[in-house]
Image (cartoon, rainbow over all chains, first blue to last red; front, side, top):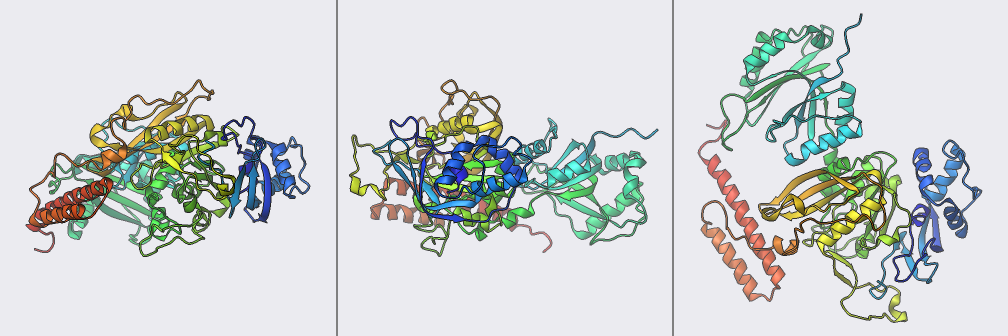
Length: 124
Length: 515
């Protein structure tokens, strides 16, 4: 599971949960894979994301590096910044671990890089 | 003063003769991607694979051709007619300026003849080309090169068949033009499912998956999402056109490469059978975002709205893949704490009409404005009416093409575009007329055919086959669904064999070239 995906997800599917965003990350295996850098895509996607949440998530698994926690204003033209953002968004992958609902503590397991967001039949 | 620039030129499109209902929508969608509109004449004849269109330039034509799956070739149209006299007359009247750039003695050329609905022998083809050169008044000053000419000219004939088995003497239409480029059809073979790393029971055929990506306006740097991702065949096609891809699937085993394989001669899936590897096979791995095990009916798992540029999907129809979502019929179930880890949730039937309504609601909320939803609507052909297509106030229907699966059943590729911002609770999908109201698609699909085969009475062999299957059904304790499956199998065999009988009969009396 990549951090770009984590940024989009919430646990509001659980009965009674109102604010299931952002999900906590418990990672037991984090890998860094090389992915082609595409500045246009990264520049296009950043405005759609919650930047502070992304930084928080990267920090919680020890991969924030020197990425500024505040989104800089000229990010679209700053290639160095886009490269760092690309690394966090696309190259860091949680292989094993859990995402955790902030309200109930319900864990959503990640195995072999694939997150399982299915609820059990008693939770729907 | 320079000659006035011609803003639109006549081009001839030569379609491939498959998926007839999809050819025009695909052409329009691809032209739209490159900012051009194509006007389709009212008298458009589906059976004729040639279509004359106005397009601004060769450059635009080449761009369009770089994506179209159902276009074989594009030509610059020089003349057309209902007869050769008409064609030659038009060629003689053709402004010299249009031809001159391609007719000079330093360039090599060739003239090719091609006909649709009638096979001409070599001698006849050569005679037609000679007649063209003799009577059209065009002079080809350059040298002939059949293998690699600078310019290739094509004489194309369309024979209209009123009787499916015989061609008329004279063509209905003749065209003459300069070949510009071929379509994008070579890619179909490249993505052939036979060589795909991971396939499932309902993996989408390569050509149709690519057409769906075209209908969805999939281009570089976009995000495409498939809520019923399966083995990711639609993601592969979308990534081919440069989009980043994401998907969810309710079947845990499918995403993790466990369970039984869908391939013949392979019993179990291997652990490396996953969607990421499917993309890597085509060097598209960098465009993989993520896939997740999730229930498509649960929209609340997505925090950000307007995330996706296209939603391209093939929902389960309940035939080869079940229509399910997490749930239980029991009341007050509680799973003990010690069993929670690794528990596989029970599932309940998820009505196809509800799947589609949920899909539209999802698309209306999570697509960017202008984004597209492309999905299949399975229908029982006799009962289908246009009101069966679900509607949403934010989505505009722009494509509806039929793929016939068997004589009674088809699926329709529906394309919708988000044209209005979404407002929670104000905008909900509705189904003017639920196609699955009386019976689920599965029940309709396996319903015995009332009318029986169209042609002739079944042969003794076929009768025996039917009896054998029915005896098998009686003697084995098979479920009702299985029996229905058998029956429909018999039905299909009946139909296909009666069709082939028909072909054999037509072929029996006369065989071309072997007399």
